[in-house]
Length: 156
Image (cartoon, rainbow, N blue to C red; front, side, top):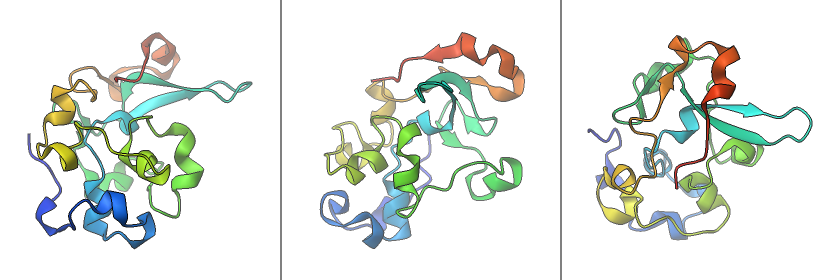
C-alpha cells in the first residue's frame, strides 16, 4: 500500500498543538488516516436525521488501499464529493466517522494509537481493523434501492 501523503514535511505532533485553520495543506491532508469510511455511502433517516453507514463505497474508492483512486481529479467524476476544510468541517460533522482524525481534532480529542501519524505506519489503521479494507462493494455495481441491504456498524 502506498501512502499518498509525504509525511516528512510536517511539524511534530501538529494535530495536538496547531489549530485546524493554521495547519499547512500537507498537515491537513496527513490527518486522513486512510480508513476509507468517509467514502462509504450513508443513508439518512428523513424523520430522525440519523445517519448510518453502508458498505457501498464511492466508485473511486480503492478497496485494497482505502484511498481515492483519483483523488486530485475526483470532482470531475464525483461532483458531489465533499471538500472537507477547516471552514467546512462544522457543517459536515454529522457524517464524519466517529474515529475520523478531522472530527477528533475539531473536538479537542486525541488521535487513536493506530493513526498513522501516531503509529508511524501507514498500515496500522488496517492492522487495527479500523478501516473498510476488503469490506466494501462498489456503488457502480450496487443499485441504490439495495443500499439498505448493506447497512453496517462503523468499524471500531
